[in-house]
Length: 442
Ligand SMILES: [Zn+2]
Image (cartoon, rainbow, N blue to C red):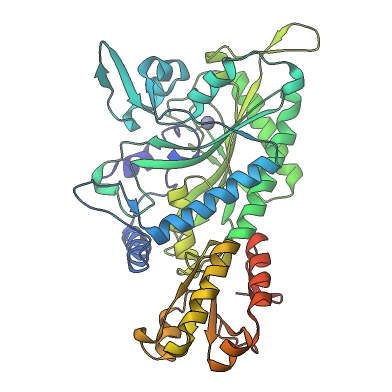
């Protein structure tokens, strides 16, 4: 019996930012199929794996999976930099008192790893990044002119999932979270929340995924929520207004809020029809109080900022699991572990293939050579069916510094200068396009 099933009977507040947001449905028979699907594909494609010696819920990333993850993380960091976020690093451990102040200890300790005793104090693997970011904010004084202050981190957090519910990348004990906290005035909340929703929309477009629905997650009966009715009323009104003005259709759901406040959750559905939260935008009046955060206003007096918690792709693990299932391993070219498979027709073209591979590396493209030792050209093309671009080099192409490009979708282009091909692919990759070539979707 998993805790998740218990949760579905008695709603329990979500811990914090999105990595901990659990599946919104109780497990059923389909869950096994879905987990199996993405685990199977991930293993077949050499993206990630697990080992009992490392432990359940602690997957490791193989080089191809690491290439996908790194590319995804860099996309997020660049998008955040463009949107005015500043990145920080904070440690994965914190003293127990930190989580007592944040409220995690009293509301969320069931999902936390037990504390470690260390020289008379207790340290805990963090269940969220929020308390660290609140402390970082508090470490310096801030003027109203600095707000909104957007603090982002792709950081690890931990969740003491029971081993019975662990598997693949969707239920893990170590989570890499795309997290950010925006410290702002009450007047700035709506605009910041709206901007975060728009970032989510752009990311989904680049990733080739679509939300199944937007959810306004509210507290439910029986949950351990922070008791502050006026705070809940204000934050719910703010998020409702943001959703209404965004024109997105959404549903309100009781029992899905974080313990400190309501949230907008962007739901995705996996290949078995099971729903989970990927992205989130949350308004929090609670932690700024708990950590006594303030800024100096235009009047010279201290004021309390509001904290917005937001994540664009949620946890990297869940995002990649969803991408694997959504695309069946045929990632958009910019995310593909191998973007270009170079196929010399015979051994005579191997030097040309090696030279082309070198040019790819110099351009930041991920290329691989599949030479004739791997079988017939047809067999090599089939083996590379998930790779977006196949560059075939025969004697004629080698003599002209051309390649005959084949696309993953079966299209074959006339031989053209290798430099032109790489430039075009590089431009599509840089644009995070889901288009393979000339305006046709992959
Ligand atoms: Zn947070």
